[in-house]
Amino acid sequence: MSDRRTPDGTNAYNGLKQAEPGLPATWYYDPDQHAREMKTLWRSNWLYVCRSDELNAALSYRTFEIGDQNIVIVRASDGSLNAFHNACRHRGSVLCIENSGQLKSKLLVCPYHQWSYAADNGDLVRTSSFTEPDGFSKADYPLFKVACAEWRGSIFIHLDPGAMFDEQDVFNRSAENFRNFPLETMVTGYTWKTRIACNWKTFWENFNECLHCPNVHPELVELVPLFTRRIINPKDVPDWQDHEGSTDPKFRGGMREGGETWSSDGSAQGHTISQLTPEDLERGHTYCSIWPNVFIGGYPDHVRIVRLHPVGPEETELTAEWLFLPETLGADDYDISNVVDFGKLVMEQDATACELNQKGLHAAPLEHGVLMPEEYVLKRFHTWVRDGVT
Image (cartoon, rainbow, N blue to C red; front, side, top):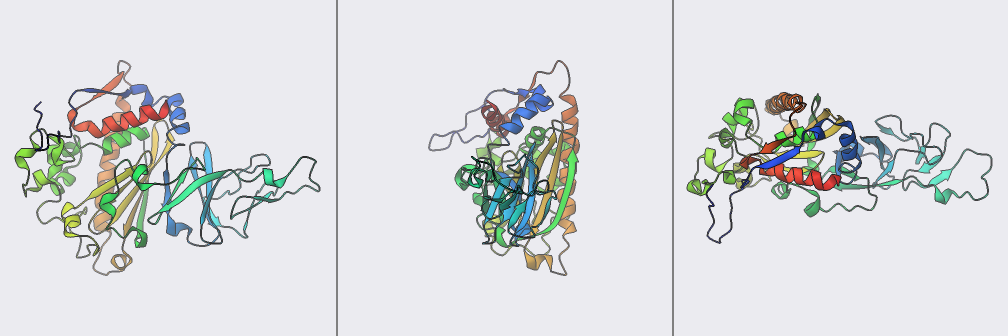
């Protein structure tokens, strides 16, 4: 493979220079490995929960599961967010039974023995015993805290209560291209959930390569000509410099001629986001991600947030949210199904491919797969997984 270099002498070709072994095949279905990943990778990284407007009201709450860990997020009376393990310090009962709701008072009250905690800070306020025994102090039994952060209209948690949300460190794929998207004021116009019979890593691997695109996504490659070449970036081929400066979307990326956004007809229906620059609009689509549970797609007229939730070693739940400007949702001449139907089609096609992949991983002689040059993001992902579980 040629070693094409830019004038400053750096190698700008993205592809892998040699074949790389994939993760062990058993890591995609072994229950013990799955449990190990849930206790390491999923407990030591920031996780997307929901949009901030789902917890707008004071004392509103939402629960969130990470494997066998149940978390409750509460909007405090002063507007701040608090997150705690959803477990009473008395004998461990769940505090909030429903997935979401509104507290009746400023207290989180255990439904079992009625121990009560301040929703604003998790401090134990009272027990239900007639008297408190010697050596017992309510100050020693607050709820176990979880780190919680709001980033541009979205809520994230981290099981380490001391974790700090730093955009420069948190994103595995940079959110820099989202700087002009008015994420804070966009609203959810549609939510879709589905379950895929595959390991959560199988999904991420599929998302991070386009070798499958021409065969799996005929509609998508017609909209995004670069994908017909089975690559996600113009620099994913050794001879990328031969086409540098080309206006052909097959080589520069972006939408097809006349295409504007991810939709069934490629049209933004006259409702592009006004804050976006000509460069943003020409790009057509951009993505950021935080492993292991979320990616965000930005398009000229909308944003799509997709959250992963491992149900088990070989089942993953996806929740997709389509965000729009309020005025776009209210426009008579804008049909969100043009956007939603296309996004669902692509994800359903991906789901089918992931399920085929998952079934084949059980082949007894298969120790691991092999990564090809275009799968350099998978190499980074595999390194992240290996490092995180050791």
